[in-house]
Length: 125
Length: 125
DNA sequence: CTCCTTAATGAGAACTGTTATCATTGTATC
DNA sequence: GATACAATGATAACAGTTCTCATTAAGGAG
Image 1: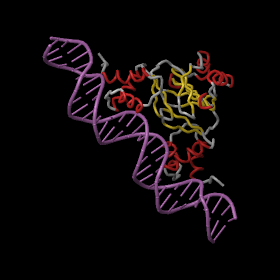
Image 2: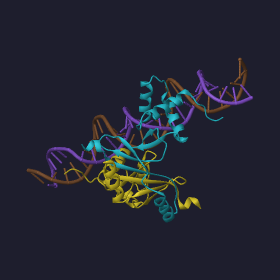
Image 3: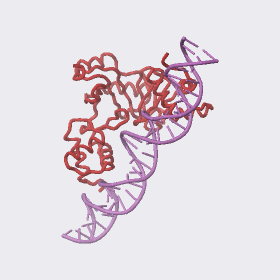
Image 4: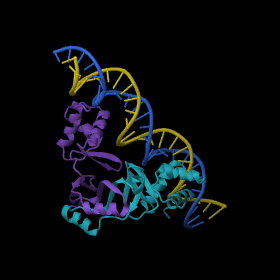
């Protein structure tokens, strides 16, 4: 037995699974309070870390601040500079792109991330 | 007249131009001391920000920490998880890739960044 | 069901990287 | 050389995150 399924961990996980957004640790705290779940800040951080480590949730860094989402599948991100929202998009690079880098540089790629910065459709209106 | 060419700014700039590495603000400080240049920490931060803002130097975020390099041209990064080094590589995505995203999502791309995480050639030996 | 080990928690202190404050300095223009 | 104000240095403040440590409670063993 290694991990324990605590109600706090489940509460944190449920928040992310229940929302289709990218949340900071603070925003997860807010949601927990909104749902009358009492979880300490350190515990929220610990569980976000734990869940991400175990591929249960996704994580992005925006300006050095961690954002978590309920989708652990690899995907790219569009970041709107007007409204700050982050949109998920399918990975744009494929196996061949990666193989090219690996062959050319002798670098073993384990993961790769692409982020697009710009203005989303809504904000252009 | 808007900006002034101070010796501190030049010192910070020269450090980055003189080294082919990605440095944190602290590492820039170290280099300055090594070269007997006296520049305050806040000034280092201000100048790194200023130089980047004016496209004089490049900037990457690694785990939320800013790294600066002397090359302001857009390029992608390989990050070795063994030695921590960051290697520059040419942008892998091209105009067509970007246009596809823009057309499909109605998102105007201003900048885009790709980072490859893995193990570099040296560390595999 | 009770006992026991230890993973996990809560509260707050500590830490890290960065930015803000503010009096002082020095660069560039007149 | 006088002047204006951008830039500096020292330090306080800040934000996000991690650490500490005493306490709690999962969940496996008996």
